[in-house]
Amino acid sequence: MPADAELHRAGLELATPAAYAEDARLHAAATLLRSADPVHWVDPLPEINPFWAVTKHADIIEIERQQARFLNQPRPILDSAAMDKRADEEGRPLETLVHIDDPRHRALRPIAADWFRPKTLHTMQLRIDELAKRYVDRMAELGGSCDFVTDIAINYPLYVILSLLGLPESDFGRLLLLTQEMFGGQDPDRQRNSDPQAAYQAALDMLGYFHRLTEERRANPGEDLASTIANARVDGELLSDKDAAGYYVIIATAGHDTTSSTIAGGLHALIERPDQLDRLRAAPELMASAAEEMIRWVTPVKGFMRTATEDYQLRGTRIREGESLLLCYPSANRDEEIFADPFTFDVARTPNRHLAFGFGVHYCLGAALARLEIASLFRELIPRLASIELAGPAEGIATTFVGGLKHLPVRYELR
Image (cartoon, rainbow, N blue to C red; front, side):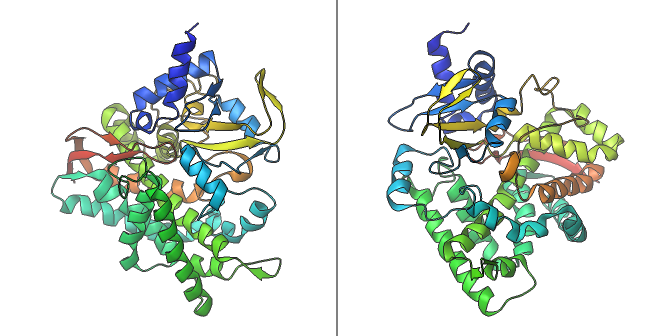
């Protein structure tokens, strides 16, 4: 058995943004905890309030099935103790579907649900395919080398989701920057400034943008998703500015940042495993399973928090009322009890019961759209890809919430 000090260090890794920038480092810690202490108490005070790290696939499902016993509030994400305190005292400037619980969650979620059903998204396939071709053409224009993250992976899903909302292209750059500042506030290359609470100001700026959008779409409604949200009613009343803004934010940010991380991480996996790239070239019908494996492999949402409303026994460990739990999705998606050879990237993996989209009532609203976008880009890219290799080190984002690669320099030849 590992020593208590070794387990303690492994638990601290799950609260350390830099660990999520290095896959080997993160997974070494998670693998140890899964085998030796799968419900592990992490107490890294004073920087971060303590929590239980839940690292097994089955345990995360057990928690997520009981949304009344384990709440998102008051601590929906793993954040600093200072930010937790500020949220307790002032409230959060933005609350999205991932922050809130029933009955409010149940009332708000259906507003945009129809826009993300596979049947509805089928009508978007042509537009998604056009954008995929645009960005592979862009790779050709860049002359055989690029930073795949900043030149391609970030921009393609951004255009898809903001087009769905009906926002002007002139605003895309601003929204991309705000998204990176909100989700990347723990990374020196993404944060607005050295203030540890700079992400809070980015959220306020995002809130202001979407308040103005709500006013405009109520005055001049259109056929876009932004108009649907702005004019939605719950119990006969229009959404509050905060609820409307929160809805826009979860779609505009999670709808592209998570997908871009998966696309970049998926290409990185294929470059490092040319046999899997060759399999996709030879059998393009594997693209759907390959996209699913990329999602499992990257797991762009690193974790959500839940807070117990009563004492509970999980795997023989007593969780006390009021204690918080980190649902560690990257760990669940490498769980040896669920996945054969979990550290093997397999484009034909079936079944693939990953938890990258969550589970239960908070299952990702945009999962079907993400799958379409990922498959579309690689369907366009792989037949045109004569060769590809790394042109420098891949770099990950320091985060405890949402992230993937921030740089992927590549050299390539396109047909």
